[in-house]
Image 1 (tube, helix red, strand yellow):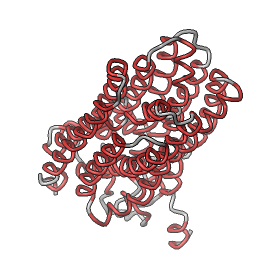
Image 2 (cartoon, one colour):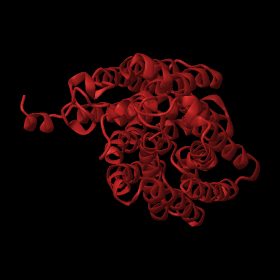
Image 3 (cartoon, rainbow, N blue to C red):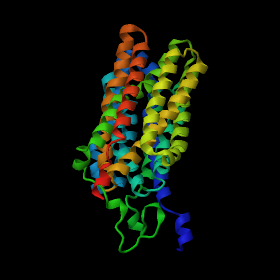
Image 4 (cartoon, rainbow, N blue to C red):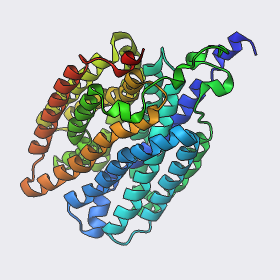
Length: 412
């Protein structure tokens, strides 16, 4: 194979495509939850806060488990972890279809989706980082845009299936499909371009060169640095509000007399915006600077949440959903690239996994707290206001952190 063919067929883009499908299946399945809230409330006589806790448990696990799956992927390879994760996602959905109590839904959906996405997400995204340097933000954005497309496609699909067949049959169909498609994509993931005789970005591997993928800090060195601590704090505080719309935007709209089918489309609007943010903004971040870009995403999420607080009808909520999705998508797209920028590629999956425990805590607390706050006050004003404040604080921390010295530069 000549150099031109190598460039045209660079396998890094296959890894990106595989990670896209894994995130599409995993997060698309998770974000269908808003479609099931009403059915689960009716089936089990549960409050909105109690039902919201199902999503929060799943989110806590799929972000928090990265602290385990990331280091395991660095040691054993991302493919094995991703295959295991996709099987667990499918199994969790199938078991949820058989639940007889809300506690059984907690166990099946919460643990199945939570453990499954937790096993697959960080390893798949970590593998992508090792294949790129110059276009890392763009490649990372493409890979995680599967989350946005999944948010666009899966909730309307779930709503349609619930209407036609019922919520139990819908979980069953989604589970079988998730396992089949997710495992197939996971088998295409590879960890290291050097296994194909390539450097990151597709250049031929020089026998005497020091591969970029092996440079970097240990997990312990990374998490003790000021850069990591600031990044962790910003993600933690922001995450308290980031995931509230994914659970509560549909009920919020229904409470304002938006028809159920149209309300579910708002999740799709978040998906459209998120896909655009991940696809287009990752390349922008490569040009303007990824640290400054992160600050802008926090500010953008805060501004869009302010708009949500003032929105009432379908079209104003749709504008919010699109805007929020764009900034949320950019935030998710850039985090793995920033980790690789400042801590290197040697233990990138493990470091991303530790970072995502911050998002896990916010996901556990935010949506469920918003649901219980609604149960008490019958209003979403306080949860939305708290979400705005959280993102503004996160932006301030991220700005201050960006002025500290990158740990990877201290090594060189």
